[in-house]
Amino acid sequence: MKELLQNENIRKCIKLFAVSLGVILVIKYLLPLFWPFVLAYFLGELVCRLSDFLNRKLQFHYKVAAIFSLVVIVILIFVLLALIINKLLGQVQNLVVSWPKFQNDLDCGIKEICCNTEKRLRINNGLLYQTMCDGMDEVSKVAKKNVFVKIMSNSKSVVIVSVEIIAAIIVAVMAAYFYVVEKSDIKEKIKGLFFYNELSKIKSKMSIIFRAYIKAQLVIMLITSTLCSIGFALIKNPYFLILGIVVGLLDALPLIGLGIIMIPWAVGYFIIGNVRKGLVIAVVYIICYFVREILEPKLIGDNAGIGPLTSLVCIYIGYEIFGLLGVFLGPIAYMIIQQMTE
Image 1 (cartoon, rainbow, N blue to C red):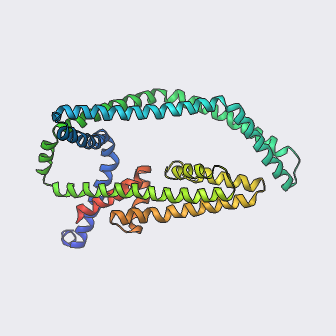
Image 2 (cartoon, rainbow, N blue to C red):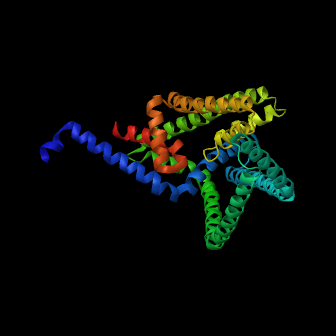
């Protein structure tokens, strides 16, 4: 055993395993506990910039400038959130009001699709439509029952989580203020830490990855929006530009993605017999899918200083371990591990 430990390669493997395990455990279990302070850091840096400007240009006392900046930024954030929530509630209200018309249009569309399918398959007229209606009624009953049970069982936990989030935001705002006021002292204490150099390099690389991720998403979003707009123009959709932009934005969201719109759209065209339009939508979807799969790891890797294959592996493993945030946290974990094992 002692001889094994004296082997340089064995020692490196053990160190790599220990560091990797430690980084994964810290990100997965400790980072969620400290997210208010991570938020406080970013908020504090934003407040610092505004406070420095007010202190230097308008001769504000630094603490007064910090309080003023923090209040202004927090108010702006809450106003923005309020506007978004108000807009969403308005959209929900419009949907509820127009639901009968939407339901009628949907019913007509389903009936048309069923009639075309019945003609092509040569089955009894109305049989497929009736079967689909019966199935949808059954699904609706089960869904209503399950939704009611979920609401009743999770209502208490939703209230608790809401209170916890509000408390965490208050803590983040307070921590941001103390960070701004005591920034110089905090920096001096951090510089005194024995792992300051490693911490500074990790922070620098995290900043590089964050910028690389945002840049990659913007480039892919632009390409996807352009390709979709061209595709929608080819099928003579009058709203091709707006739809292209909306689909490009949705493609950047991991929970939604491009397929949630494009696949049903293409299938719908094929069912009603409009093969040309269905093929256009399908081809655009396939091209956009491969554009994202090829460009995302390459753009993140090139800008972050890691190879496309390594970046792809990091994104995939990060997603499997950390969930959706793993797309961003995977490359960060890799670079932290790389920095600590050098």
